[in-house]
Length: 288
Length: 288
Image (tube, rainbow over all chains, first blue to last red; front, top):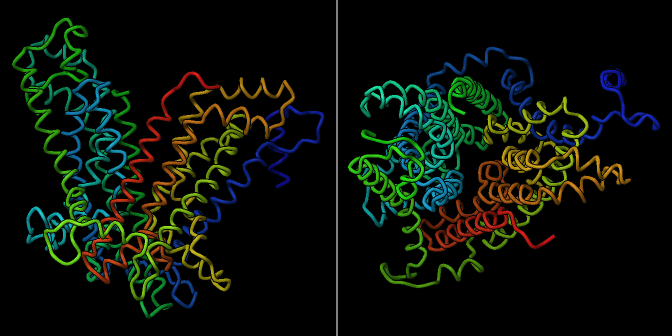
């Protein structure tokens, strides 16, 4: 602490020379303490415990458990569901975002869709599963979808309900960034609409589109409440299996399975979000 | 997506904005595309909600009848083995209030302070605030489970969930507050106040905070939204909040009308909060 304090005052001349200098960073200590205890500590526990056996001894062989066919099955399930819902959500969301963006920038439709998207992108969870259950489930009002309880399809449809609005929110700024001049320039050079999208608009939007798809992927990966309320008997995805491992009767002997699966999820999300950040930087080169 | 025009083209405002104009046929095609889009997506978003509304008005005994029983039951619903619905609602609302208060006290002074005095920490704070987006709640809860288990000796009330909820809402609150802070000239405001003899406390509470009222309100509403919809952490730490209660009811009595009335009420509350936000966010004249 003392070393840090001297460094600080040395690097930055203190303004209040008359008082004994209390370094200014002291004011941020409560924040760092809070985040440290409730965010970094739990995450640290997960990472450390993933490499321990239930007795508390180090066991790096735990890691090979991720290759266990059963464990791999949950990751594959997660991957399928996330891929399905993020690609569907991204494509449909991009179409909707284009329809919104091509209207009056101050119009009522645009404002309505943006604020509704803000609500619906957060509207996951138990309630959403209920809503689809009474729409197309076994007691559905609209029709009784026989595939409602089929694994990637039924739940994938439910996921698109919050993925599309999220896509609209994330992708709209990118579409707004397309300059009118680019379109005019290509038209002056004799390009058809198809050629414009194929050679100008498409490549410009592609990094932003892929980045947004990755964000949707991460979003679907961490969702738990919706799928749990949809079907709680069979665990299809990693979060469900973590939940089972945490609350199973076996208790302590299973705790580290949860840690291991959680670590696997952190790794997956980190990879996806790194890709997202890189693509975002690439997209920022032209669209701002 | 073929035969489209440039972005920002408004059917009403177009001729004045762009001398070149579009061919009438192409504009018509674009508009058809837009309205078809809005109708289809609008139906997709509305139908599940309507189905839920219809089920919440279903008569208790006979299908196809109308009654407001389910809405009346919100106040009195009770079932064996699960806590009464009303207590879960109370706890969730209390949690929302506490979480908002803690968020405000923790984040606003820290962010103002960092901006004024310790700029070199700004990136670190931003990184930590956005970190919960990459660490899914299901991962956080695995680590937290051990911390909560350790202090379980003093049996904790469900209200203690607010410690974690602050972390979950951190990214949303941070973004809202950060937008508000960049919009005002914090340095000039604080220098003026300081040179008039104000303490740092006065600067933050009486000078800067009132100037970013809209951003603070925004942050609070987003925080409340996160708390109202939270399921994962409460469920896995074996606490009962609104979402967990709804989940338990649906496991006991599938398709109980009260499920849909309560879900819809919660959703309407969120919509109402956002409506307040969109009004309060507008710059207003006439009041000091």
